[in-house]
Length: 479
Image (cartoon, rainbow, N blue to C red; front, side, top):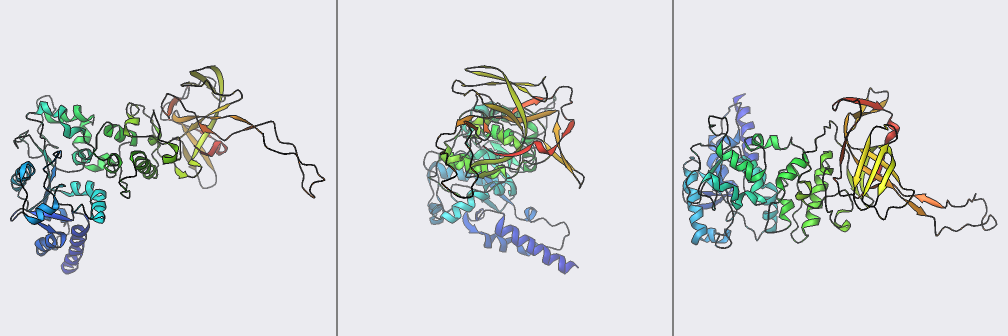
């Protein structure tokens, strides 16, 4: 049994080293770059038959989080040649000194440990970055614009795209100021000793600078993935990246998705691919945004937001859901099954519509926007996204929450021009009829100034309670 367990642990160790840590690390004993094979050889002899063996407790490395200099950062080529110099080298040496204080043998920096001339290596590094930070023993943060904790709120590190995941992914993190002095007396700033009022000054500063709640700042990454998509997007809003596509690529780990890296595709296309990947998890809060949408040739749907900033201010709109919502991008738009409740227009102007639910007369929805071009004869509906399908094996019904979230939809009339009426003498066997004077389009998303999702409270229903309706109200639409 011990032999079998040791073999199991060796396989577990090999898989971890060859897949879950950076492609190469800096060995602190001689400042050389070493690959995964050398790291494996360093620690493999220490693998034992412990039933509770965890490779991450054996392979310990420090990882650097920082704001890149405008120029002078050491490159992979310079590191390999042993000729790094300048302010970038000074920053690396400060990082190495602090890493040694945590008794680790290896360290990693994104400036000099990635061979950026290799597209394959760059692609793997970008996709894996979140997990490399998560698996680190300690993440050392250098705040080059801060001297005291009070300076953190204005430090550019808190506003960059890539540092978002570098803040949330690691289990342990330590902040150092511009002079490489520790900003607190704690070994791990994610688990600080609290002040008499139960707070922590560094967590307060980070919360103010990033908008991220304390319980998320102090948790492991697992807590992040339980938070709603619109919340996580709002935390990412306003962050800057040098390459526009990185606004999407830097969020892959935050949303537990993987994208092919394609620099040059542009911001909108990269972000739309990110949204499409996130939609597969079925969180309907991804539809909870407002503002400008990307060009249709990039998104293919009016339901796609343009950037994380589209979610800012929308995450406070709370609603529950227990079943994932199926969302699929197609050539016809976003295919999505919704519970469709008809709405009746009760009041309208050029910039406002008041709609009343046909089944719940006491439930009305007011929508703001430019409706000057809306045609007479439009039909309106409310498409609920946070419904549940409830069944006992013999039948299924729809569970509707007392507080429901949905989209305001409409159909517009179109003329039947272009249809030709043929006489029965022109063909044989076909039963002809005249076309209608007007037809109605399929349901479309109403373009408004408001959020794409509207939350309604059904009268006389508790917000988390259900009432059931027939499945006939479930309809798949394309928006």
